[in-house]
Length: 315
Ligand code: NAD
Image 1 (cartoon, rainbow, N blue to C red):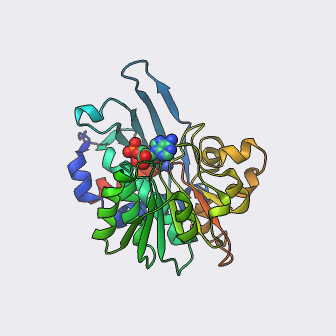
Image 2: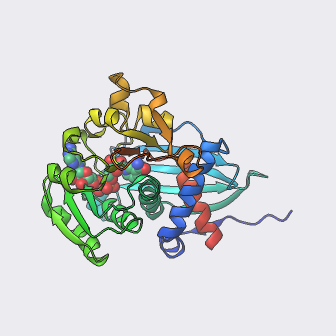
Image 3: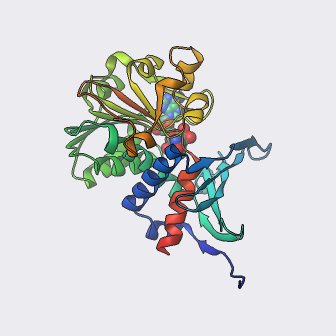
């Protein structure tokens, strides 16, 4: 077989090649494959490198159904923003599952944002009430407008209510809502709970920002910010009250939003369902209009491989 070099895709290529629908389909398919046992993530490596305050690591896996084998390498460089660069930096390496040869090098920054937004969007498509009208957003960082744009395509949303620790930072999110033709209002966190049908939390917090009592029956919540030990976005009582879904149970219990309720022993592994089971129709998902559903989106390497493979396919 002739040796050919790997395909190289830049950030600009990925923006051109992977839209929201492509990312949604890739992530939905890989969550389904994970729940069938056709795709699995390998143990994550994440280390403080002792230079530039950086955290660096790898997320890897193999999807036998989508034939994606590879690794996302990257991490967090807190000083980058001052240099005009993104703090989170990542690159995906894809390998030919038949030969192990490097097949593609794909820039991962934009793809990380779209695959994370697609994950919450998949949960909204499968778990939120059909008549959801108000989207609640908690957080106004880099990921937040990506989340909003992907979410509002899943239901007939009419308005967005949002809270951020510094409300003045909600401007970009407000612009994304206006662009999507939705009313936008900056409100308190308690009001997000009182008014929203669907809530996305996407912050780097270490304490609960939404209390269980504030959440209305029938709400769907996608907790997307908690991806490390110690991080937290919502009251752990919500994990007891809600029907819990996740991308990967092992991560949900250790680094996801469910870690706190697991540690307090108010829930156990059997209370958490992989969203892939709902996608594959082996779990009914939401069972009533009053049920609160909570999706613990921890972020898995297979999502990165799935969207990178979609970029390669489109190229
Ligand atoms: P960012 O740094 O751009 O924004 C951080 C957001 O968190 C801001 O809204 C900020 O106001 C808020 N915040 C920070 N500390 C807070 C606190 N103590 N209390 C309340 N709010 C606080 O980050 P980003 O790129 O938008 O990412 C947001 C979070 O999502 C991060 O924690 C990141 O690690 C996580 N993330 C998760 C996935 C996943 O797959 N689940 C993927 C990417 C990022």
